[in-house]
Image (tube, rainbow, N blue to C red; front, side, top):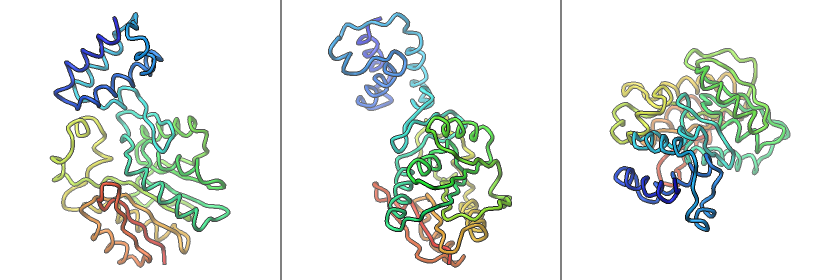
Amino acid sequence: MILKDIKNIFHQELDSLYIKEEVDSFFYMLIDSYYNISRIQLAIHSDLKIGDSEKILKALKLLNQQKPIQYILGETEFFGLPFKVNEHVLIPRPETEELVEWILNDQAVKPKDKLSVLDIGTGSGCIAISLAKNLPNTKVYALDVSAEALHIAKQNAKLNEVDIEFIEASILEQPIIDEEFDIIVSNPPYVRKQEKQEMKANVIDNEPHSALFVENENPLKFYKAITEFALNNLTTEGALYFEINEYLGNKMIELLADNDFKNIKLKQDIFKKDRMIKGIKN
């Protein structure tokens, strides 16, 4: 089939579900990944043909079912690095890149010769791996309750050539880890079930609910457990960083203050939403 004809089919099928520019993006990502044909090549040679169109038409069907393009391709990018993803891990978000950037900026201001970092609820490993890649002389640990998620995270560590120590455990059970950390960071489940209606169907229908949702009655369940763990496992003056629910910033300030953390800072993301918080162990 001629590729420009397939592109027209994409728009016929998908323009009612996605904006036109997004459909273009899906198409170009797929032809690059499946056939090693770039957007520029297609612009120069508009009559380019492919012999086997089955794969891209199958992808079109999945897009029609609102399956995320990252899961269709099995990969995405985070903080300029490649990551494998599947239905067992969340697709890394731009706001989480801002959390990583915050940590790196803080370390640039007050660098230490050696650091020990723990990422709790690592998922694809995007936070842990990005920190390991950008912080020399740092020992990075990554914890998750999901064996399937850790399998992907280990692949991503190998893909990005970083050494991470992975731990399979539930933070809710307060695992015993014989290590003190200079930094503990987490992007735990924080979407209350009452907020489901604010989310896109392709997220709800495809991404792991265990990594997304918490009960309405106890939305800080994971934050409380991680804060308790941090009290026992952070070094003095160690830093605790969280990505948070935009509606619960004040509750998070209270949680950290009640646990004697100091220099608490609530930070907005690029969309002006309260999205990150940091506290220092007193």
